[in-house]
Image 1 (cartoon, rainbow, N blue to C red):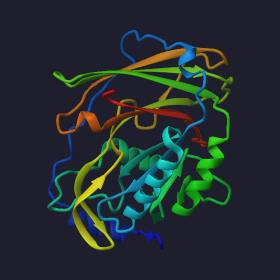
Image 2: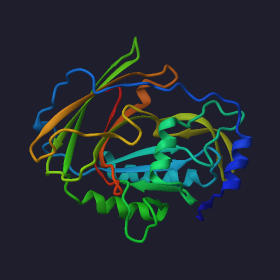
Image 3: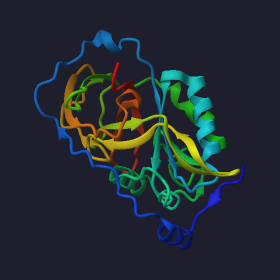
Image 4: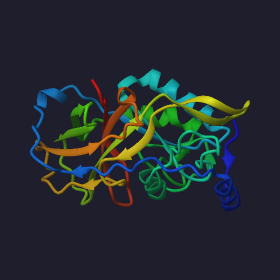
Length: 285
């Protein structure tokens, strides 16, 4: 299927067409607060290299459902070793006047700026890596399977464990991420990102058959508990070291706790933005 080519004119027209929906509540997490228990090495002893795929999408993108279907097939194939995040940002992301939700987020806009505006849709970044032959980190649907398989075969330089506690009464979420350094990292800028995503949200989506009212959106980026581009790790990143980071936030009542997931990943923060490892758990076990 051909990709959709965007332009500044297209983006301007879509913004004019956007409804007057309010942007969902912005979560203001408390970062790196308090003492958190460092997970034992046995927790991640058998952990393999997982892969992150970040899909840029929008409710006005007619070809994006095909990309979403392709990602679902890849998730079924790779299981927990593939983590998907759908980022509603860019030209096709403004909601319709009749949309129930606005899936755009400040974090999503910042990630779009960080990784670069796609020149076509559907598009996604696999481990934020610029593969041979690419102009940037975003690639088309046909490239995803090969990129994912290549990244899976690389031994992890970092391993991660997530412990979380969600208080259903207060909606307070505490996330503890333990970072295990498997191979000494010499890059001067290594970052940890923690984000919250939500599955199974029904709302409008443009499809080849027309505007669908009950389209099921999955792995929607809801918010980042760290900076959108990650928090720089100041710890000793020599092989064998491990440390824990704690994040506390309040989850809006509009988000279904049972359908929310927490994803944490370590990436490089310079010109090369490669993701070294990613893990994901359900917010409510």
